[in-house]
Image 1: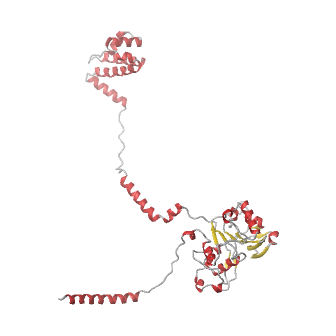
Image 2: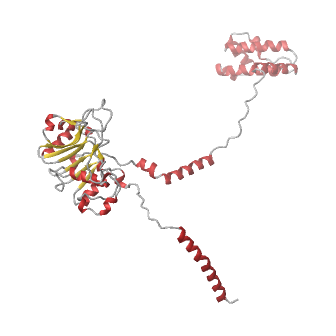
Image 3: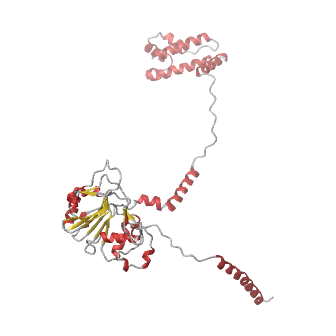
Length: 398
């Protein structure tokens, strides 16, 4: 069969199989577009006011973010705005004085009340005391917020409400609240303004650039954004209303009261694809290098006789075998070792000279010392016992 005919058959077979498969795939599958919201990265993961800063920059304003209030580094100007998400109870008296002096020169400060709970152990923040704000003892309650397309819209559900002293109430420009307390009050302070809020959760958002332009100028796709933080149109309107006094005049300082995650936290939470395999490899290497242990050995059998019984049995065996001189020699060596320790000069002598030196040392007759050192006859057990007794006495006297 020619090659052209073979290739024609192969191509025809492929087309015959491919066409039904393609038709089946197209009839049983449908193209679907799905949008996945990725978790925040970088500064957006720890700065709750990141979206607000991006929105302000998109509107042509200068916005600066700070983790903590640092007045020396911030260099506040009269037309600036400070959004203080940080707990005002953490501010030192010098910071409070400097902050209020800046507000008197024309600054705009937004501050929130402390979170609810633990009123017995908490003191009123000094900044709120200086402003005449009383928040201790107040709880949280939702405040209705009129929105045309959302009749049941509420705000400040988690924030601590507050009240004002008579002197502070005299400086109020705008207020918002109910019989449960205020959720918002704008106070005059010199040439500036101070906005006290029950909370600032509506200013938070997910990391996407959102505009604070009026609703009529916003693109229609904004209406499709999820109702979360600044993605809610009512929240953007409320934020724009609060920033109105100095909007476009100076820098907006966003003090978000948060710290970026530490290096160790990032390693543990985000670096596990690296350290987990390395940890498993290390454990495997240690297991391979570890000593192998066998089965548990039984405890040794307890001795049925004491050491003294063994010694006595060994001596009796030597006596039965007529090895008395060996017993005498062992005791004699024991005595000589003691002599070496107590009288080295006498131990170096030999024969009669040594016996005389020992007799003089012990104040014994020389004949008695000679009898103790001389080996007994092999079958004379009486002499053996007597001489061993003498050697032990001589050893004890040294």
